[in-house]
Image (cartoon, rainbow, N blue to C red; front, side, top):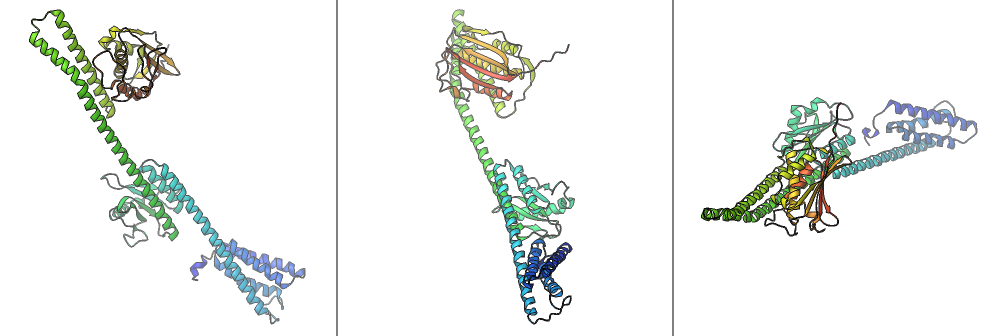
Length: 511
């Protein structure tokens, strides 16, 4: 056993040893006065050595207490009293046994204390690892993963931590995590320190303080990695010290957990990007397929009618030419609405739509939409009920398009002569607008899908254009952009109600 095993010889521990020795002597004096045997007094000193080993941190104090107990017992309780001589020939053996017993007792108590401390530290490390693992499983994004790991390292090591992350082709970016509220030493973030971190990131090896590579650094730098792939570099401020083997083991375990979390985050991000790409590709394919199919009918009609007019228009009477002109006009309007919906959907999907939000009166939005509704709406009975003075903050152009789509949808899927009712009211600080009809309605199985893009109802429609299923999907996207909701339900006893809500805008009148 070398001297380092005894730990530092601390003055407070030495004072505790003196006090315990004095207390044992006082109790021994009382026992001697009461006529107790010397073996009882020896037990008191051995008990004092045991207590001393528990209360002090230095093993030198235990050795000192063992030796001093023998000498004090000899001085105070053996004949001749108050000297270190002993008349009885059996005393040397007694002193030796007493010393050995005291020494063994003290060492056993010290080892037990050390083992208890090790068990406590092991339990603490296990709790730190468990907390870190649980937190990393719930982390979202690289920044949160880095923050959780760094704070656990600060908690475990009690040292300042610097975490360097690589973002695309940019240089390593340091993120500092000091102990407590104190500011981190600027020397740990110097250009030289960042150069060491960059070397570790490039070479995938530890370097810095307490190593043989770039050892002049203030911090010890280790790569956060899985195999040969390095996600970042962790710097631990050592300030001339070094990590214990237990701390190093715990550090490597936490970095492994961090690297695994970063790997999972990367995989999840790549899967999400792949899913978005696949969805966009499917969306693009569906759009092209639907457009190519549904554009064929109006374009063929326009082309055929135009060719007929070119060939025979001069010889045809006005009454025969008028419906041909009307068909060309209706087909062109349908194509214009389709293109408007496509452009709006594209802008919303790619995030380029810029909302011009202003307080608008919903009654004016409905009136404007009716002026641009499908010409076939004249074949229906459209009723606008007296509405509340309902203001909502909205992009008027987009909201007019929503109401037009809902009206045209009701016109398209109900027979001529059907009643279409538009009503607006305020409830629970929401502006609620309902477009209802008394047509054949929508089957319950189709209701969950009517707002899906490219979904078209199986309900028989009144004209030759079936549509490509963009209108209601566009309504849903626009309403959600405004922070509202849209839904469909039955209009009892017959028909359908489309309802959308917008946050109400309170009008403040200043008198």
